[in-house]
Length: 110
Image 1 (cartoon, rainbow, N blue to C red):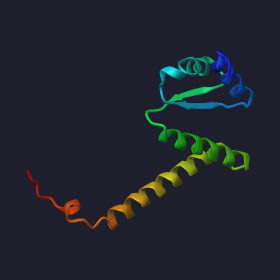
Image 2 (tube, rainbow, N blue to C red):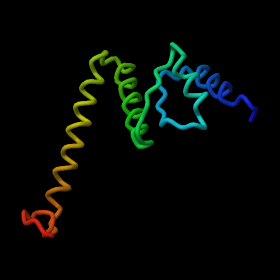
Image 3 (cartoon, rainbow, N blue to C red):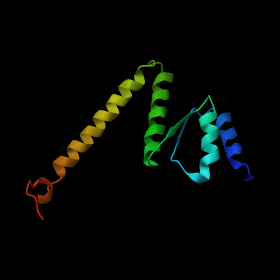
Image 4 (cartoon, rainbow, N blue to C red):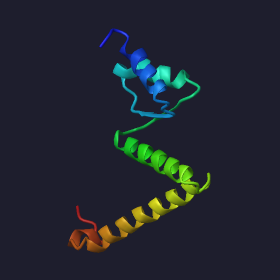
């Protein structure tokens, strides 16, 4: 990799028509982040953890799939609502399966 790898990486992202770039601020990637932020064709999104990037990528992909399938530009809203309900269902199941005494105790211990 050359000394100006950030420029090469940005060029590859642009060539692939990547429109959304999620990043966790990092000094080693500072130049690449700045190039993505300055690019009008890209939306650079700061994340607090890498795990958020999975949600960003999957959400963008699912939204694009539904729009490309002909369901219109409002279809990502329905997908987002369905994913939110699925997340709430997972939380409800997790709470119902948590049967440890400490989890349901209202007593404060010191």
